[in-house]
Length: 278
Image 1 (cartoon, rainbow, N blue to C red):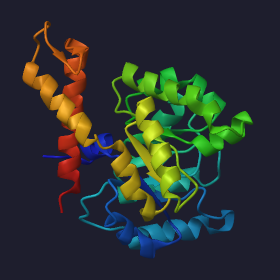
Image 2 (image 1 turned 30 degrees about the vertical axis):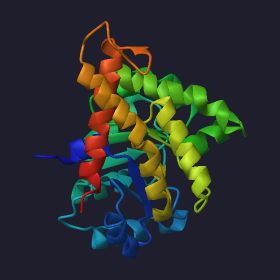
Image 3 (image 1 turned 45 degrees about the vertical axis):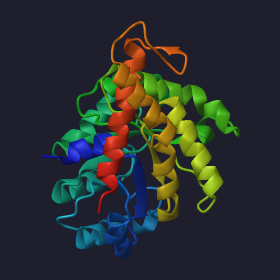
């Protein structure tokens, strides 16, 4: 039986929806996204936080197959405790913790929400330097990358300056047995080329998914993360050879890492097929 935790671990497309727009929540759950994040933080004005929580409680969908997470306000905000209380009542699949900077914050969010898994959103320099402890915290389910806020915190304007941070998220996720992290948003909502390029770069850096801010981005993200027909064909030919150390495929020696790469490609292709079935 597939659990919400399993779905969070394998989700590729993550769609944000503002908590102030409860009419969009059911639509987001039916959009084809692998996971939905209801936003109580950046998408909600300071004076509308309490109303947003009320909207969320009233519109919370029951019996949907897509995991729904809630992005709460940060630990240093006055809304933090009330947001956790709302999560305790609603029992979302996960709590998204913005500007996560320590393992203690992850632990506190899990305890305050009643044991709900936490998705730390890494978007500050302090969060980066504490990734070793954040990823080792048992309540940490998977890392999310807040690239826009991190660029602001670091004072950089070239997205390539964040590649070292991307590598850090991947490295520490692997080291602590977490699923591949989820890359940040592409702000150009309807720029097919931009979102495809960004998603492909994320996949190349070792990410396992991407945050989306509009349903129009979903198919391009999914397509960029899916193995190509050429990759699937290569993987099948590698596995057909097996562990024969004397064999080659396309001029490449077949050793254990190559075989494992082929297995992962076919596993990802099989998962994509199952996730896209109606």
